[in-house]
Length: 433
Ligand SMILES: *Cc1c(COP(=O)(O)O)cnc(C)c1O
Image 1 (cartoon, helix red, strand yellow):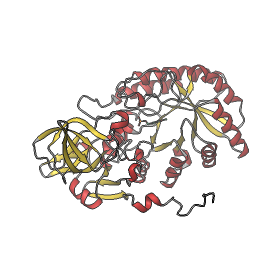
Image 2 (cartoon, protein in one colour):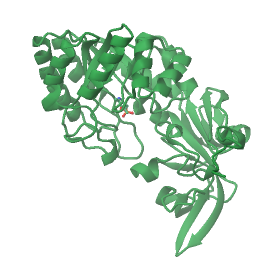
Image 3 (spheres, protein in one colour):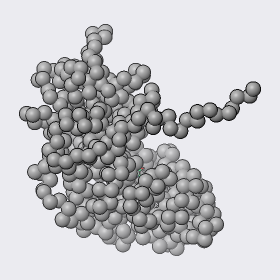
Image 4 (tube, helix red, strand yellow):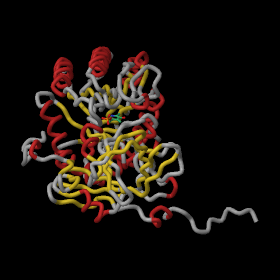
């Protein structure tokens, strides 16, 4: 998998770097991209995505595995198409993601459907397509799915997403998903009972157990603890009569956002999961999102103003929390570089134009002493960036650009005012007079 994909060893190609001539996205000056696409703009490095994909599949080469990229991290059409071409399947968590995946050329067997609150319509769509696996998260959902598949004369391939009830150390409570009491998954204590119910149903085929313990996991312990629980459960579910073909261990592999963050121990990860997978004689499913795209994208934004208030310096840029929600939502850190640094430094809050005090990209950060008109880049913006953006303050969504080597293209146009108003009815007849 992924073999022969890298024409150039990645070490020779740096996705994003400050050079004497300014900041470069692969071989393209960030300034050229800003001139062509405007700001704010997300820029993704195809080489970086390739390299990350290759790195993971190489580590797992001795393990029967299928990668299903978690498209919620970055659902850009060019990004998911690239990953499909590299050999990846996809993990979708909504009907919209399913539709986007199909349009990008993924086939039924390439698709795993997840999500804690799938609607009947979304389940019907997945059964209609005949996706490889639907990971259900409650008995109620299982009952509904069985009824839907029955009406359609189908048998749906089903996995049970189990809450493995492991605690994780990661940077923010909002990206832990597999601790006791979280909304995700079937509580570990009820999993076997739900499996027995599934086995008794006519229109579901229980063939997988699934977990997703959290995101940006800095150690392998949560995987080890979760896998041990899944392994034990697999044996019990098999004794109860199910043929378990897949173990799905979700996503969670981290990326480096700042000094002190570590790259994941992929060799350790492969050892750990490889052992369990071979013991159980199943195929592994992994659903990395952030790991492929997080460090493969930057956000290019332009400085609008500088100001001082209450003894504090502010850098006001044209990207806000509606473009990149992570700093205010997750308290996340994004390295900030001036595209043409002056060399002078200043400690400032880097903030957006949105009318919210929570609209910031960095607080109390030492940055280049950038001036109005200057361009800056925020690193680590490839995952949970554009996909979480909104039109708050009636701000059109940013453009997205893909770059490889010396080439780049706008792959999603910047939204226009008309785009934002397209769904509004001009003369709705709701008045009571
Ligand atoms: C979010 C999510 C992923 C991807 O998580 P990352 O931390 O981005 O790798 C994978 N699987 C499921 C079920 C998810 O909800």
